[in-house]
Image 1: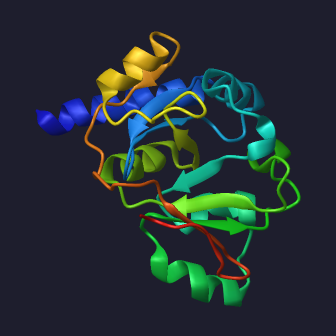
Image 2: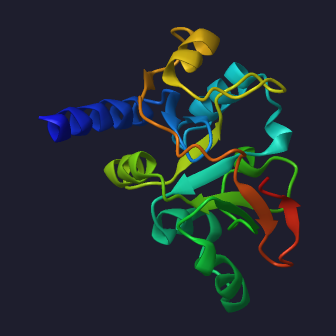
Length: 190
């Protein structure tokens, strides 16, 4: 019964994404806001909800490397050696995008932020969608991110297409961010 309920929730969340809506879901540290990365209208709705500039760029999360390939292509062997040992896990990498990658995903940068997650609910959601998902913390820019579905509802009310309830992995900080070509740590994990 619990598995059926979980599958039903995943289907509702995936359908909301397919319909161009913004959803919320638990990640490694906090709740995230997400949408279809190919749907420009959905991405700009998400940015509007957060009061975030498109210039800052966004993170894409996936359950596997193949779901990120439409955005980053085949990774250079040196990048693979650096990146693949950290996935799945809470490390986000800045990787040059392919030419057809929508610029509203990476903003003013020449790289796109991507991660293969190990959060079971997000893995299941990406598998249900068979796609990567935009992922950014569930908050208004500059404020604390939500750590519960209740807090998400308090911040965003009825503005989201769906809130996929579940537990975060209780990491104390957002994912570590590193530059894939240089290995430079842009944002350390605390």
